[in-house]
Length: 179
Image 1 (tube, rainbow, N blue to C red):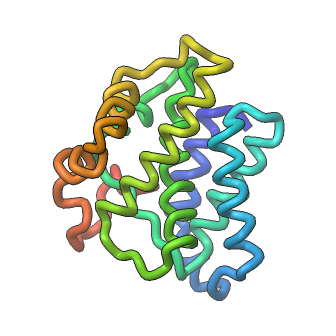
Image 2 (cartoon, rainbow, N blue to C red; image 1 turned 90 degrees about the vertical axis):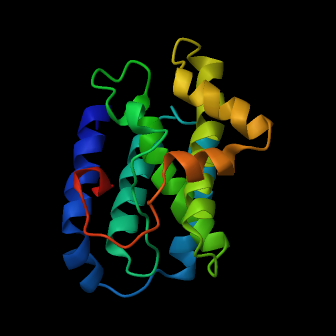
């Protein structure tokens, strides 16, 4: 599946989420372990031959399970989602935030703080971004470079809280909340 198609699949799966979540029970320990392992593998090898199939499985799993919730919010990754041509792998990196948030919730099931969960998603993106730049040095994003600087300075969580203000509030889903 090509990158634009992956983003469209993510949107379609998100739209079907309520119905799919009712169709099955909670995630299993085996699925949760696979989700974390797959997320970490995608962080290390975002362009591996198996990566598109792994992304499809993770997206479907996140949408179908009723016990782990990934909330998309407007914030520092918005530019990545707008990468229409995919030359810099923006959508691929954007969707990695969903995987990072889900993996974090598997590893920290009692954590409910939205800033911490969103930060975990962005940290996953940054790990994948560093790996991507090793093989694709022209895939640079100013937005991600700024987040790397913030992370190095220990300020990533503060940046997330400031730029995603209101994310944790209960509200009806908007167009940006589809994934």
